[in-house]
Image (cartoon, rainbow, N blue to C red; front, side, top):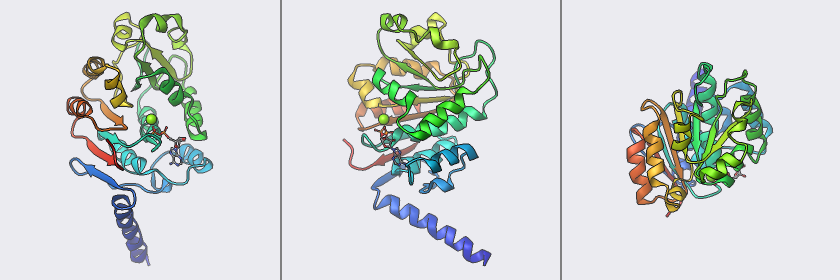
Length: 263
Ligand code: ADP
Ligand code: MG
């Protein structure tokens, strides 16, 4: 009986791989990529997160999530290319939460554990607020950390410094909720508004748009400022040469996931 059950599981995993490769049109590269996880029930998230996913409108991971989440949870760097609307946010946000929860609390003066870099204010707001129950739940959970222990993602935007200072982003920094800071990130670090001392989870989202907007040098500079033992994930809707170049610089031995027909 046990043997039969075991065979079932093996068959299921095999089917998952085939389904990913054919139906979902996904190509995976890199050294020894982990198996895709095609059912939320098979994620090793904690109970509360699993419960939140169960109660959400999500039925199963999208292809990019099926491959990127187990890769990220296993500690690997990830390069994920999939078109807009394919569910890339959760593919990095959920592993980020798991990573954050695993870390010891921050001491005074230590910057965030996880940093998500996005090219526009709109995108930052979208990621921060989340458009679904699961994201809201996660934000709520991370907000319940003790005072001064701001571990949650800081979303940093590449807008002009004046805009950053005139907004209340810097003022809110001590509050017990997910933060975002705007402004040229390196300026913020120089000003002492934040630091990357404890940053061990770094995400670049919409990498292609960062380059379209001329932020290549800044992206490189952020990557160079964050400790080399960090885990780094990079997502993009298209696979441009500059994305590939940065991926080579910033990512170590990444799992490379390309889903669908991307430019
Ligand atoms: P991308 O960043 O790839 O453009 P998003 O992360 O913004 O995509 O997600 C696009 C939409 O799909 C959002 O409305 C999101 O809530 C929804 N979504 C994400 N993951 C799933 C899932 N597993 N099942 C159903 N809907 C999902
Ligand atoms: Mg996105």
